[in-house]
Image 1 (cartoon, helix red, strand yellow):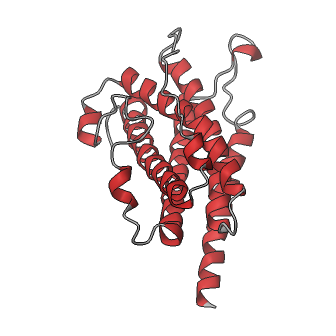
Image 2: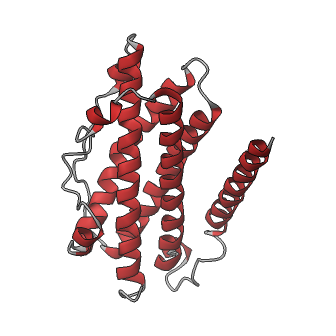
Length: 231
């Protein structure tokens, strides 16, 4: 019974965070719109607000990704040795992403921003299919399905926010960098259960890794651009 109350407390706190995030997004039109000198069509949400929101959503996505990976690992991957197969086989591996915070600190902010956009865009498609395929799995724990649905939603929201940030920080820049395309759908649909579970494991492992990178880069950009490196 203790487990139940812990679970519902977690659910409760996730719900609360969700309400906070959605309220912030709802308020965006009202509260943070500056008085527009050039008429309402040219209003901009303050960059600081955009960053605050993006950092919050990104942190949330990373938490959900880690939880989902751990749930999957516990439920389907115990003792299967999937981890050895998962190394270096993410569809985003071709993006030249800094490996850690130190490397990211040496990277120009425009480059970091383009990388975040590239990562977010390259996850749109796999996240959509992840939800569809997880829905079809027999007896899949709600802890996995509900997080998959949530992450897909939040990824879109974060991408929108990042596009707005990009537009303000680098006005007039054309960011149409090609991004890595995911081609892993057949492996999530294979009849061979073992291979299918291995493919899911790999995808969730990559999602956790990439969401961690996005979170790191975004916090760094926030510190650099909004707080002038005083963090």
